[in-house]
Image 1 (tube, rainbow, N blue to C red):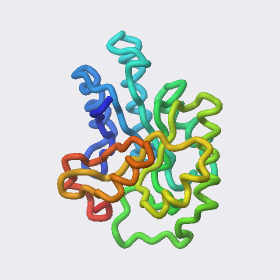
Image 2: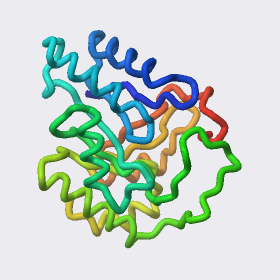
Image 3: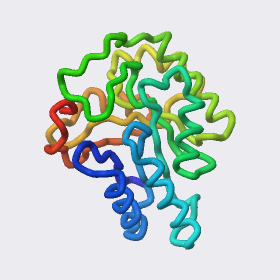
Length: 210
């Protein structure tokens, strides 16, 4: 589905508020839901999915459900995916993204001064190790499609030729004030779908996320 509901509550929406938003969105006709383990609300959202399926509001195959592997789980992608599936009470995901292309972890609700002493720059070898784990999830039926998020053209040029399964989608910040035309055009030239997050902008994002 072309229009989706993002479930990033940031610092201003609780897991329960996001849960209620998803519940109402399903009933209003939304069919694409974009989540992530690090949003801290997958268990709550999973209860809404189960409720909707049990009540016959919607069928599982009618929803396009998305999650992402967080930075601290790049070496344990299957474990991360299985946890997400358990929390969401699902047998499979429609899309699973590598949330960020490097494994640098920051705790929830940190501020702009937060520094991870173990942070590392982008590495093609490290990223491809993570991506090959993603590919195995497709092989084993845990996810239908895999994608990448928050990438750049140089990173994509380095990794796309090494992928056995090409990303179905690239997710990027995309709205009238930040259009990333070069990246947009490059991704389209590779035959990859683009998913834009914050399509209306996000002026109330915490300073660390701007």
